[in-house]
Structure formats: structure tokens, C-alpha cells
Image (cartoon, helix red, strand yellow):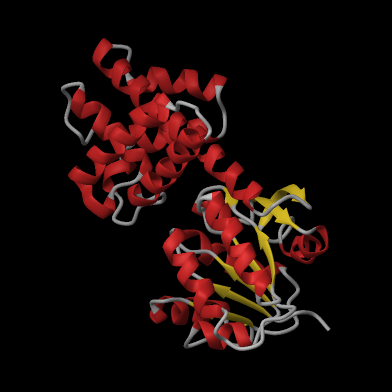
Length: 306
């Protein structure tokens, strides 16, 4: 019999991932959904259809009724609290927890130890990609944990939630989130580079459109997408961020902590994090990782908003 699935946490990424699980995952039973703000779960379930999803009132209810429990929450405290609550649901022996959150690898390894001590199974599955990629099932999934447990997750990754896997089977679960933290520094540094480049292009007289033509030719893909977000003003116009400044700073902090532990310097990340701090001051929770552009503009004598 096909396993019963549950999903806990409906941020920008979680909603799209749930949608694809329901539409492409060949589930034999309705997906059980829980979110701390219940209205968000109710709205998603209404969109997906009552025959394909149902809303749980508590984490314990979702876990007790499920075989595989996906989690995707905002930070280390949230996932630790979620798992602590989940393990109070009663017998969890044989249940598989799959965490898609971006957290410190030490947190991931601690979760594995906690879940395993109760007889549960655990796979780390952080993902790379923007919310639109989550909506379109184009994420890159990083899988780590015992191979037999990873194999239970794969039917729901490539071709369902994602376009590809990075497979760390039989490696500690923290290997997946270690890659995620290091990989996110590439994104942070990309936005910093684009922000500085567009600011210099404007101030030197080259112009953002001319720079963008170069970016389109030389760096297709994410560089072009972020370049458009900067030059079109998306970084300051949207009410709900795509990659919230608070989460970007959390990820930068994890990267800097990891570097310090291992005797490395991440000076580019230090610069970008300082600009994110300015974004927080200027925009508060509306700030986005792309809003680094506004901070770079401001320190260069231009208005934050283009």
C-alpha cells in the first residue's frame, strides 16, 4: 500500500512543493497539511481540492496519521520545535521524517539523533530554487541519510517536486544542509555582484540596460533573472519577498559560523550581510535578498529605490 504523506510548513516554497506532490506524486490518499497559521493550510487545501488534501489541526494529528512527514519551516528553532512536538504524537517507530528546511548542519544532525532515538527515520532534503521553481516542479533536491530511507523519498523528488537530485545516500544528514548553506553563499554573492555592477553602470554612464545585455549574453539563467529584478525595481516594489531578508541573514550567519568553525574567511559574505542589515533597517520584513541593490545604491549616493 502506498504511504500516507503529510506536509508541515507552508512558506513560499512549501505551497508549490505541496501542489506538485498532489498533482504529480501519484498519491493514493489525500495529502495531510499542517501550517501554524491554519488559514494558509485551509486556503491551499481548497485550491488543491478536498479529495486530494485535508488539513490537520495539530502537528501531532498530522504525524500520527502519516507514514512519511515532510517539513519545511523557516529556521533552526522552528524545525527543532516542530520535531519535538511531532515526537509527542505517540509511536513514531518506522515513520520517515523528511526535512526540506535550510538550517545549520549541526541542527540537522541533532534532529537525526533525536528522531532515531525514538525509532523514527530521517532524511535531509533541502532544495535549491526560487518559489517559481517550486511551483513548476523544477527544484534541485539534495538528499542525505541512509540509502534505504533516501530511496523512499526519491519517488517524490525528480519529476514531482524537482528536476534533479544531488544524492548523498549513506552520508550523514548534515551533509545536505552543509551543501545548502555553502550553496546559498553563491546566490548571495551573485546578488551582491549584480548590485555593485548595476550601481557602477548607472553612475559611470554605461547604464543598466547596457550591462544587462552583457549579463544576458554571458551569464544566462539566475543572473539574468536577478538582473531583471534589480533594474525593474522588483526588489523594492513587492509586498511579500521571494527570499526574505531575515532568512537570507539567517543563512549568511550559518555560513559565517561554519567558516569560523573551520578556520575560513568569507569576506564576500560579510560584505553582503552588512548590506542585508541595511535592507532590514530600510524595509523591515518586506526586504528581499535582491534589496541588497538598494543598500549598494544608497551607500553610493543614489536613492535606495531606482
